[in-house]
Length: 291
Ligand SMILES: Nc1ncnc2c1ncn2[C@@H]1O[C@H](COP(=O)(O)OP(=O)(O)OP(=O)(O)O)[C@@H](O)[C@H]1O
Ligand SMILES: [Zn+2]
Image (cartoon, rainbow, N blue to C red; front, top):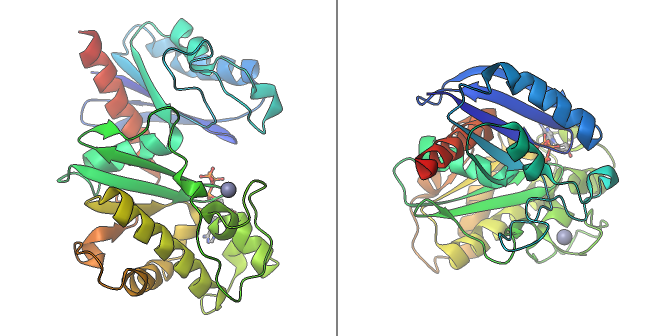
């Protein structure tokens, strides 16, 4: 079988071809420009395979309309990328491909990859956070994405400000949401330099760990997942995960039981392939649904 994967991101579209073993056979990265030119390149990549593909999975940047009954279903909504506002992304892809398509958000796709082939392989529930330019999350319970009226926006949960943290929030909407205080740009504002340039022993990493620990605490109490995966550029700081585990145990203060922190709080097993593999699984589901 042959599946297509499209990770539609604000900076790049990563397109891949894979098989039922979830092996990536070919992959290309296309710079995100205006919609028409970008979609044209995406279609060119897939064109030689279009009659062989059994399904395509898409993980899209947002905000995107996921309400099936909506007139703008599958359209990009009020995106900061002005040229994409109102663009019918899913419609354009459905029109091009000759096979069934299943789609969700980019972070849901990464969560789905980890749920099926990564740290969630033997679990029935998983929450995945990406901590990068923004903070987004996907929650899965029994193979279903959690969400209703909208896709979830857990990255904007409110957190308690660290008493010594007076830095401006990087989120234009909230003074003390997780993204506003713990995303890469938020660390950058606090540090006065890019997060990746911050020394490993800088105290700001302890503040960062406390914010992420609050996120794990809130997630534990609201969703009680079997595993929480923390991905994205910021988590590439390997010293951060142990700090988060310690801070989480402190903030939770033994209130509920959970697996050991080493089993419970993970960085992605699939690394950068989580979303691609998640899209292949979506593609497989699209194929099975259409049978
Ligand atoms: N090694 C690193 N250490 C610390 N911060 C990092 C590192 N790599 C990237 N970042 C920070 O993460 C942000 C970029 O996030 P990421 O690498 O996940 O890409 P992205 O795809 O742009 O993010 P998003 O998932 O929000 O779209 C930047 O703010 C950057 O400062
Ligand atoms: Zn916010």
